[in-house]
Length: 206
Image (tube, rainbow, N blue to C red; front, top):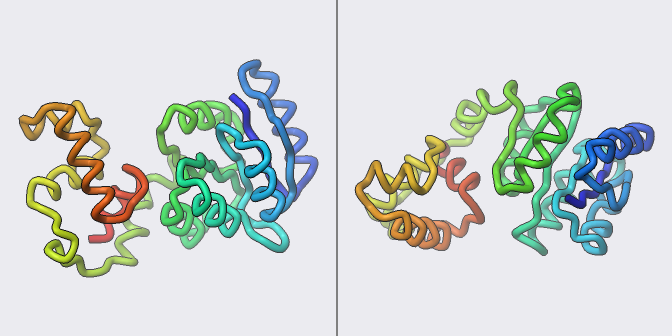
């Protein structure tokens, strides 16, 4: 797995490179120390995962993430920060980040990178339990007809928000797995969302 590490503390960035590469299956192809560097390094290296701090001088990690995901919606960004700030967490979710973990959970960084690489979303234990409450504070009314969302599609959205896999959703709704995949593609297109994580956020907001 090739990753890029961006942290405004260069000692932290070098330490992360040393520790992660010692695992044997992670290569840190570049180090950066600002949001603007993160954008340029992503463009030039196209890493499997971008491991990035949030608070940085000049362009923040969140601002850099927005630019990167606008240019490449498949980008996998994992935020690593010392700040468990509610606003940061919600914004990271909104832009489509694949994870938000705290630096204090040092042993969990490599497993989190592997999980993100495999298509999962990763949020630290102290964060994931707060997500529904944080998103509810931004709750907005939803006009189902406006988006042409059927009752069956809403059922699928609810089950995705509960963390069920396509296979589990298929079993729950007596559909084939292929049909569930087709529904999900259509739902994401209708709501102009990128992935299951954003779909779960959408559900909690409604």
